[in-house]
Image: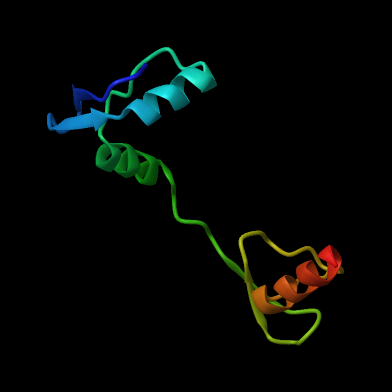
Length: 94
């Protein structure tokens, strides 16, 4: 039903293929417009809008090690380093 189409990227001007599988995916999601940018330009555009996150340092409530977190820790609330957080998360799922 769908056939690969060659489109031109509006940012870099290079040709890229809009595959039959991608077209089917777009149709399933209800997207009506074809992509206007190649994958490389889409990725670059996505990454350009992401700013670097400010990280805060805290003491892990479980092991006492340093925990770097993307939020300002509230005093009195437990904060865990990534290793302890992963262990706690794995134990919850059991």
